[in-house]
Length: 447
Image 1 (tube, rainbow, N blue to C red):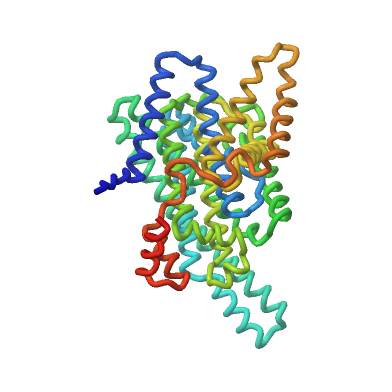
Image 2 (cartoon, one colour; image 1 turned 120 degrees about the vertical axis):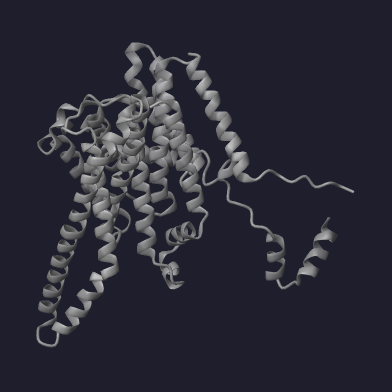
């Protein structure tokens, strides 16, 4: 009699794998077996992998050809840097001023959107338009109804969003400094850093949601051009941000950012990003995103709200970019608008295509390959260092010629593979017209 050995649960094997990888790299870094330069490169590759995961969620899984990832990368970087710099330097007059401002924007925006959703402003606009059509022309009724809806929406944003944001700001300014001031300085800095990463990622996601509302009705190259325009707007804003908040320094570059990023921070954020994305993709909501990508008309025919699915995927992808930007800001302790130009949005796109579109494993592999190969080519003689920007594209061109689907295609490794469905054979047998008993009998005959 054969004994069937049960396999370990997926969460346990994944946890053991991440623990071994994280501890191994921490030992390598702490013992000095790798130079500080290569430690930074490995952490940068991981950070770029998080940003590439977000772009893959938008393009690889959502089918949205968007080119503004660097803009959301910069939003997360600058907003999180404002929070931590304020805690260390105190540029606003209160060590929690930056945190209070960003959280006020986040909470106020969320509550305003929730209020607009539950009040059903769009439905009210249609009813008002239909009612006015009895006395006015269709065009006049539509203009008047739309203007009224906009006024109501602005009032909701000012009253509910502004009021709740002001209350949050006052609460943070009152509670956070004494609460964290009672902790040791090293601990309070880590707590502020965690809050800064969360607030920056949330702000990037919310701005992505705001951008998605008018733009996701576009498709393909139209969406690409529209998001490219937003990327240029964001770059111009970063260059002139010092006129709004002087400590951002604008085109001179933001300095004085505390260098808080370590390997555990980068690794834990990457693991959380992977787990969240994996569970999202294989959930029922993720399946709707995939269905919309494959055939939006068929998906809508089956009752799926394609617009809502795309908006959700786009928002989450922007939040990933914001998280990566926050880590980047505290890795180099310096931010300059040139890092967030619209051309920089091409980098995660190249990483995604190189590793494999629609593959989480491929996103990480492509990010590491891009960063490590580009920096590894610095070993060339000084007269040929600039040739690395020619050698790398040639390598990419060769890969695309002989493996256009990328290194991994859409395949996954380890726990990122699609989960197994219990009883799949019986279901397949039944769907083929056989009863479950007949299916089991045919299976025993094949053995």
